[in-house]
Length: 369
Image (cartoon, rainbow, N blue to C red; front, side, top):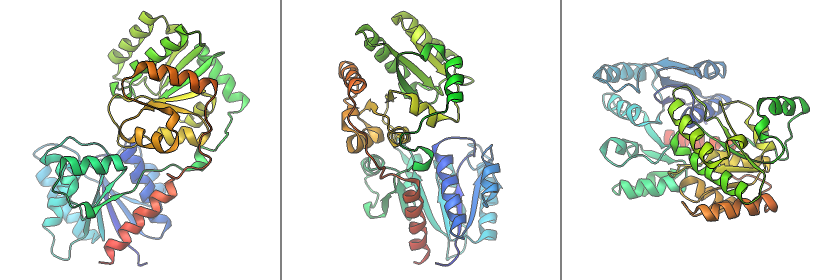
């Protein structure tokens, strides 16, 4: 296959699933000998992107302002200079700017690809994500959402490429070393000695932290010495929300069995010490990568059966899929999984390598047209 130039567009490179996917595809492009260029407003992930052999062009393609018109002109000039084979937009405003920039270029123009990473709100603004020659959907849930909300979309141009994990980063049966366990015990004495529930996720109401606290209370009321770790919920700017959670825990009498911590990089160790991993987002998510990470390590997962999380649990771990809002069923399933969890899958079909390979294959097929 000839060497391709691929430009990815996204608002910024700070953190998050879109950013992670961008870097993962950039790495795969470089490894395959292609030219990888990312256009964004910058952020802390620019350094690892450059270290991996990609290029970065700083443009405010995610800024909603009248200067967006000037940004289109600047982006068009950069694309004319780069002469890419593929322009891949991963977010709505960058997609609009990329769309208009490409329309101003002479034919033959670069091929336009979009990825729908989330369950976007219906309407014309989000509909730009359906304008790609190929539209990547990160799950069957997302594909169904696109066809339901934008029924004029040609199903033939939709391609489901699930997100994936690197099993080597989440090895089956992983165990933290003694030093890690000692630090963990010192940091979170409230989590020691009982059955540990882990909910990894940002400090946003979407993640269902309140449902997890209510589950903790139900388990403890039933005689289970359960503890709950809300990993990643303690973030700057979330103080009012955290105060709500702490007040709820206090009112339910479980404050002494709860820890709310900052995001941390040793999440594989966190999975390994958990007896049960929770994914109880109160709104359907597009995919649900934490389900795969936990199952890969060998830990049972319990969550609401909707969106991408329900899709993954239904396929990989049905015992952990609970009808949304059925708190009695959630508590019953938690007791059952803590007592005798069914075995988790030995292998993960949703791998990073498979996602990278499918995406590069899509680029190659488009570039050969």
